[in-house]
Image (cartoon, rainbow, N blue to C red):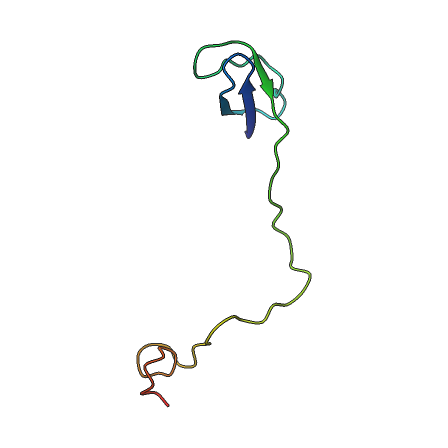
Amino acid sequence: MALYEYVCTTCGAPFEVRRAMTEPEGPVSCPGGHATTKRKLSSFASLGAPTAQLAPVGPVASGGGCCGGGCGCGRGR
């Protein structure tokens, strides 16, 4: 199943419909009951392997927990 985005050409309401990938163009009614809809071109995020190794931001825990050096209380030093 895929999630397709549509917009109603009568009332302008955007909405999503989950349907089979083989049937993206079948008739769809908007939530307001109008039958004139148009499928939108969706954008999506691609989660792939990073191209560069990023350095950690902020303090890095060295022992975890309070007084283990990672909590920032100053007693673990």
